[in-house]
Image (cartoon, rainbow, N blue to C red; front, side, top):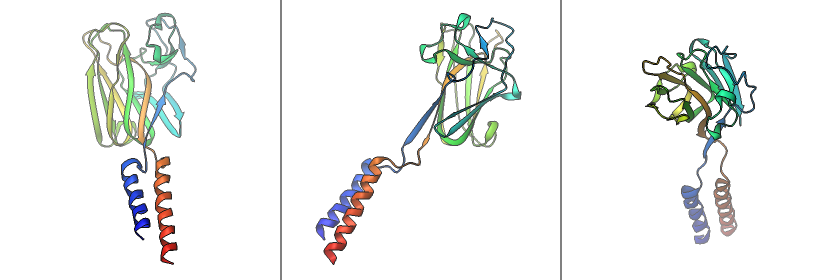
Length: 223
């Protein structure tokens, strides 16, 4: 009886220390598997081929668009777009065709954290605000907000905006700038979303096995 009680107590203590029933799962979205809609574009006059982009990864769906369905491009980081961060590989998102419309990110599952990498050419003082919402398309309750700016940094100037909250379903990335007149004129890549996984960790199964073994052994001793 004492042995089985000790086994069960050990199992419960082990679970409380190292056996959470769910762990955080982070999923990354980039644009490397997408077709570039503009290759080595000129500085002005980009057509903006997309009004919406849907990405999938590990059971998640991320839909990217801009307020008012303003167009944007998947840009090949070559030609006059070369020099972007090495971690961005050869493709990124770029809104230069119309730099005044905020980005919107819709998630198919509730997230607890969201981040992305932003870049700029460092020619103006771009300010960004990242807002998280409980509903789609930047609707529902405002759950969290973060703000920052680049200043006149050397190209490529990089920021990593992030927000944390429960049950995030959409986000808005709102830009601003100085008198140069290019709000939202930043390019972006490497979007990450985080949420608790519903799949038990292996250590959880160890807890269950220990408790089950103790229960079975207790029954045998009592019989």
